[in-house]
Length: 92
Image (cartoon, rainbow, N blue to C red; front, side, top):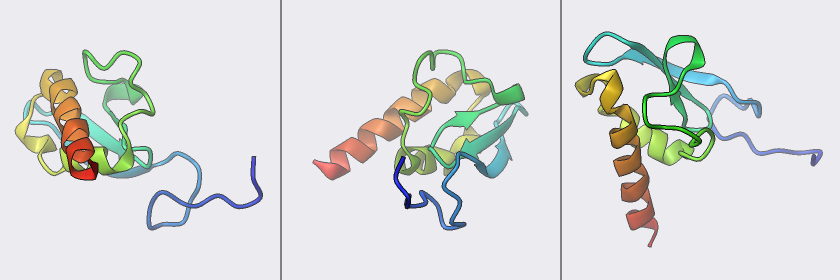
């Protein structure tokens, strides 16, 4: 571990932490993490996310977060995959 780590968000913290909270269309409370991950009940991942923990990326998480309240809990894996593709397309 290096002596200096750059913070992924504006608060300056370098550890993984929650940066926003909201609700899905069907009323599930969700949290956006500094890693870009989006979790729900007790830190659970949306159905279909499997081993994606830590692989979403903050930019893709923020893209998905903009529309989070328009989707139901069971639809979030699809939303996050589309957000990752959109970010990758912009970078290419």
